[in-house]
Image (cartoon, rainbow, N blue to C red; front, side):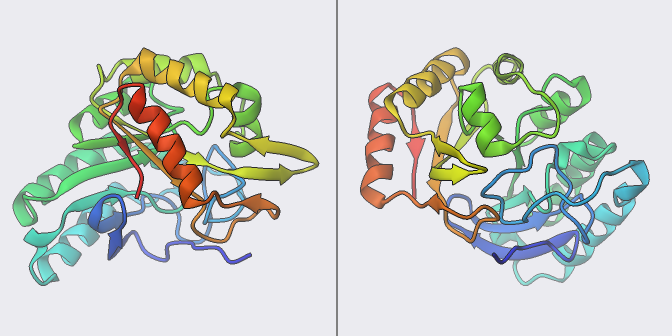
Length: 256
């Protein structure tokens, strides 16, 4: 298994299949993954350590490095997106809201055409400061790999107990102005079978979509090495069939 940990707070630009030319922002430690999920497919590998407030980079470091990169880039105005991803869950940073404010201000000055996107596992949406910050970005991209808690627990291995009802309630606050993202896969881990592609799974996901009305549903299969063995990458035809099911239910679906 090979893993990818970001070795800086600002990285790229890279070409994202779903977002275009993207400059990454990592607000998490560069020496470890830090997440409240331990997803079996995560390109960053497994969680290794706990965290405290001092673990996170200072807000000013993120802002300074973002300015340095954008001010020295060739044609920063051609950036499509500035994307918060990196070595875990970005909303865990205690100054997440302030970093979003800084990023929007820097974007407006150096790359006004770029959208600001945040990839989040949607577990902190009921925290007022996190929700308020995510409302300010162009693309809040919120993960839900299964709307059935047993399957979600097997895929995402949350560090603490979570509630799908709470995730849905958090998503409903956006009044449809968010993107829902789902990884589809099959396989097994720790002796338990995993499959979020079944008719039962898709029915539960569609019920979640009906309850939250995201402006787009972004679906994708495994594309890189995974920390768990025995996971299956779905074929293009299988992904297209899932996309068709979601589209026929009346939702804007992106699969590339």
